[in-house]
Amino acid sequence: MSDAIDSPDIDAEAAEQLRTRHYNATVIERIDVHSDLARFRIRPDEPFQPFQAGQYVAIGMGNWEPRLPGTQTEIVPAEKMRKLGRRAYSISCPMLDPDGQLAPVDSVDYLEFYVTLVRRADSEDKKPPVLTPRMFMLQPGGRIEVQRKIVGHYVLGDIDPDDTVLMLGTGTGEAPHNAMAAHLLSNGHRGKIVNVTTVRNRSDLGYAREHAVLQQQYSQYRYLAFTTREPENLDPSHPAYVGKQYLQPLYTSGRLAELAGDLLTPDKTHVFLCGNPAMIGYVPPGADPPTTPGMLQILTAAGFSDDHDCVGAGTIRFEKYW
Image (cartoon, rainbow, N blue to C red):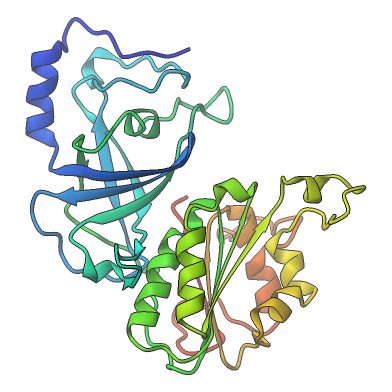
């Protein structure tokens, strides 16, 4: 059980003063995918700097703000009550405007974030989640902080207009890929753009409608969505049983290339990875390799390079916040 933070130091008037002092942006729209997943469209008070598709920015809310009922209780020390908790999020993309036409990030005056509600820490030795239990209390008109500097090296770079772009994501890891895909389409990319995501349930596909429309409008665009927790993933007796659909075996089996309608070979393909660290398979210097190979291990064995100094087809780019 959880409820608003009750502190004798932060009454309603003091809370409003803190919001005025710290917050610099307004939620203009909230699209709820389901109770624990939403798209937030946030407009900063001042025009934001131009940025590249795939980059991220930190957003924050005050520790004095109430938390969503049903999320983990948080005990905030008095000396931190007036401070902000922040987290970095990749900037997503509306993909379509109200008329159903392509809407890349540079066509709108707001920033879109694809956010999962973290109700509690995943282990007892970790602190309660700070931001999302507060963020999911916000409705249109609610105020929030957006850091002024949009940053990140996870960007498209120079890609030949006829090359294939393969983007592999898990969950909300598709956010930067949506921005990248819209940018490529708006700039006339001719090669295949293959945007792949895997989620637990089909209800977690927060941009399914937009992707379906774009596939009809652009023949070079392909959106492939897979699940791991639907009945056909878990029940061998299900008439459509396929097992859990993880990206690694989908790639190694050739199924991904078949569905993409492209060989996905290093000579013409750029790969982008974002999402679950186990899927990516990043190994910090000096650490042991993962027991189950991630996409980095699989792709390098297939002839791709994860050297960030390399350019051109055959390179792998990946996002990491850890």
